Length: 589
Image (cartoon, rainbow, N blue to C red; front, side, top):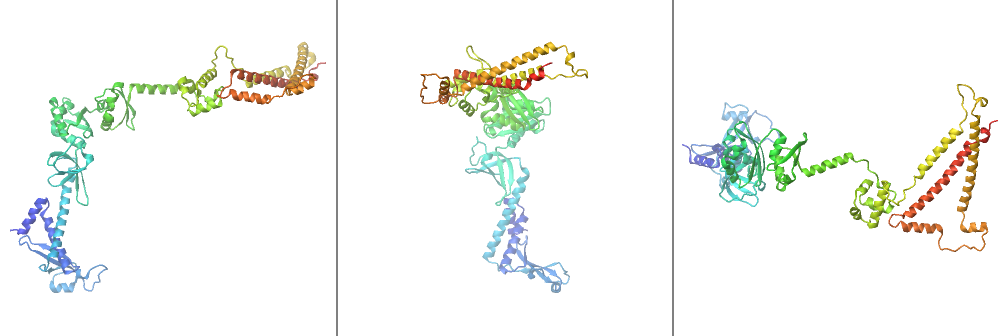
């Protein structure tokens, strides 16, 4: 018959859910430690518990070694005994065996008993932690029945029967409120090992909770006829679940909903009113995406990037808000359900995007705004500062948009419009078109003069390998006429040169010098406060206050530039004529 002490150990073991042998071992270790402390010895102490009598004895164990063996550093001599000494007490012993010596435990007092009690409690707590971990660690994902034990500011503590479980704030549903003593079903999330023991974490927000509830409410899911392929959940708000049937005669959505919605309504009540969307799964990703975005109606779905798993969904303008959902909830859950990235656009947004792409493909090169020569520097600076850097951008802007540019007034807006119109070659009646650029005129005239001189005064060449003979050439009359014409041209160029020199010399003189040379009496020069150059500079500055000159100034500047250009061309023609015409070479005897 077991002793009363052992019966008490068995009762406590059942209450704690641990093995009684663990408690017995804890008692033996506690007695051994208390005995070693009492005798103050480093000997190897062990306790033994007698289940029949309930007596606890302590023994000191010593290892038998050869005679004269030297112990290594750190080894206690009290833990060893020589072979010869051991054989005196037990002749049959050998080296390596152990001898035990009884230690009286009756002198142990209150302090030793208290120490033994602490050791027993510690061993029992460690056994409880290991038992809890081994009990729940392999049950992760299961649904457990729990009772609310207490409600803390951030966590809710549940009683699972053999252990306590904790539900953090992030694992709670927004719609749920708990009261002490309430029984609910929770999903076992994980079991953590901690210093104070294993922590069992449960959840009411895990998707596995919805899956298990469907398995318990829908027989077709339980027996495998209908399978749940994916679940996306935002606890307290909405859940999307994708189901598929292995039997073509069974409707997976109808099986989950039940007659008059009885099955799904039972699950909704368990989740405290959380909305549930049941969708039929499809292997075709575009079809699956259309169903996942319900209740919105999708126009079309396009796979943008198969490797990155990106989809583009086009919906009608009236369905855009419904497809996105409240705070993006609908499209977010659909993306979780599919495992793809979803980009939702309306028909209008897609049309604008296509138009922009087409315009970018058809648009030509951009022209810098500096090419509009009629714009002043100040206006150019203001336009560039406002981000208007191309002629095309400036031409597309309205008068109202130009008026919003800082520093551009109504007058400047009108002049900008005229400048842009002139840049594109559009002139109204009464507006003077600009002359051909001077550089192009000079280039064309220079090319013509060079070509004429090269044709008219080319040196004679040989024909068919024979020397040229003027006597046999029957073109004497034509050549004589050409020679006479060249002489007359040279004379006219000399006269034009003299007239040009006279005009330029007179232009380089002041009015006072001209009057003195011509001997005009009775005319005295007037005294003015500023010279002609200063007067012209002042008038130019006044006309450029808003970045533009008047039309008369522009035309006058063009005329002066053309006069100077003609003078330069005359000089070039004279130099060409002097270099190419030689009367001695062209005179024929």
